[in-house]
Image (cartoon, rainbow, N blue to C red; front, side):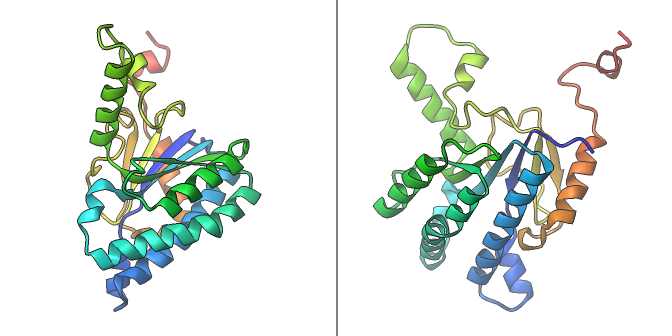
Length: 235
């Protein structure tokens, strides 16, 4: 089985998972966090080099304040506990997004775990917090303007200002929970990703579910604008 070099996942469905079990929404978030550790470690075993997870979007601030506060506290707790366990697994951790609205404590925790894991080599884990694809593009434009506003810029040059750089663009994009949209995630970077949508809610997305997604990925022919005969070497 060929393994994608870079997988990006929208981890959707925590609240619905809890609702189906007559539990509060926050219980779904707790269960979802436990699934993150499993998938990260399994991707490392499979040989996936980069994994990018959409944990909290910029529009998620619109959710009930009680839920947002819980999510922020859960994030802080995971950084201070579980993320250090990922360090022991040789995982390199990086956060992408706008940190300005996060608490000082969380920002300091992010900086600390990024520095601690910066030389790890098993797998590169990107966690998108207060992120959106439109925000990413706008912040890149502002950097370009500030750097050299009068010079023309190529697509390759522009990509270097995006938050995911220098990591390669995702090969496989996965969204759980049955939704069939990308919800403002990595708009520039997933232009040629294979997009896989599954009915499974994120807390139920286990190793077997990931294997199925990768098998589907292997059934795809990635042409990048070319035709099949070119890919197959006929032309």
